[in-house]
Image 1 (spheres, rainbow, N blue to C red):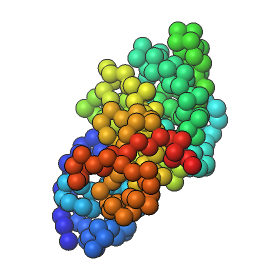
Image 2 (cartoon, rainbow, N blue to C red; image 1 turned 90 degrees about the vertical axis):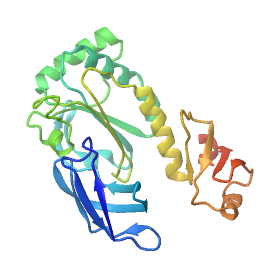
Image 3 (tube, rainbow, N blue to C red; image 1 turned 90 degrees about the horizontal axis):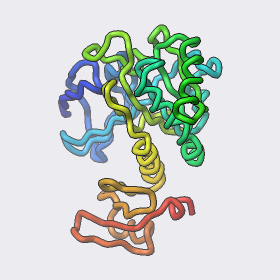
Image 4 (spheres, helix red, strand yellow; image 1 turned 180 degrees about the horizontal axis):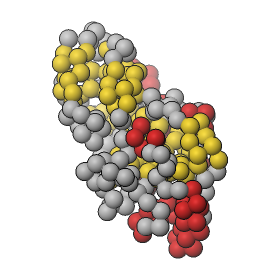
Length: 266
């Protein structure tokens, strides 16, 4: 049994100690709960290798919401796709205008990767719809994905998108990447003054999709088609079977191979 302190206030509403029981495979019982995103949610899995390396798997909270394209049930709307849910502070503001326009320009790239995009703010639907015209006029891209009109802050509170230290009423710039299994794969939060790099989000999607299929990890600044790393859990015999073309090992704990998205799909 281990008592693990979690202190990441960007993720957790309050610091806590999580008591877990670890078996010989490093897998913990799925019966634990965690105060997460302002709600108590069930933990799907916890993978443990050391007190500094705990991977918590959590299902994205479901919700019903009004959007600029109609009502949705979030999990039904995901429908087996990868999903990017992102929030922006407010309509008719300069940084948000550039972000939503740029994201619209990337939609074809996300479509190629089976990724759906959905934005969120706490603005009124009329304000959001009027603002869309400004985005197209100034950024050259029409917003081609739905925006959640979270006027009651239900979704914002559920996902911890409102940070009291920043504002009690406006969402910060959060990004959630959610897998086809509705599990949260990545979370990012930016201050209102800093626009996001959505090219980086696209790069992360490439990494997540590759590593979801194969027992590899991607190194610093990795881009699709570049060398990746065989994870340490794969021994040499398994690696020879999985990667018959071989790999380089500059150190016993580093095994690099060239592994492209085309190879991953074969």
